[in-house]
Amino acid sequence: MTLIKFEPFKEFETLTDRVQRIFDELPTFPFNVVDSFSPRIDISEDDKHIYIDAEIPGVNKKDLKITLQDNILTIQGEKKREEEKKEKNYFRSERLYGNFQRSFTLPVEVDTDHVDAKFKDGMLHIKLNKIETKKSKEKLIELK
Image (cartoon, rainbow, N blue to C red; front, side, top):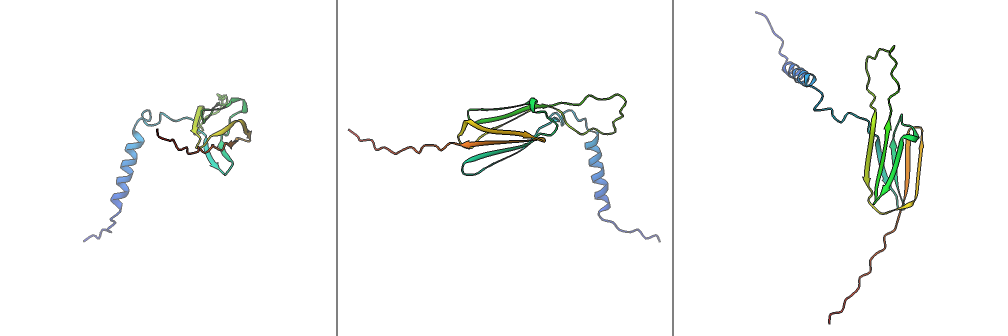
């Protein structure tokens, strides 16, 4: 009689391999439509300021546009592909390129006349000054 080693999880391994193969064979068009560059952004605040830090590597300063309108901050630009050299054979190309636009509604009113924006070494730093909102006074209205 032949002894067979019992491996209860072996079937799970083959099942996950089969499922992975199914997903690998699906066409990428409907699933990877949004396969373009989008910068990662951190937004923070303290008592007087709102800070926006964005990682935008490979983008030139002249290709960036920052606007602030109706308390909505918009960062847009383009990450351009370097000219491909025909003598290079690519084994893998994972870097993303293209136009991008990110818009954020700011949580408080800010001073649009005093915005500090700096771009160096692929990092964009924006500092916005908060405006203190005037507290509305309660007024008692007399009935006649």
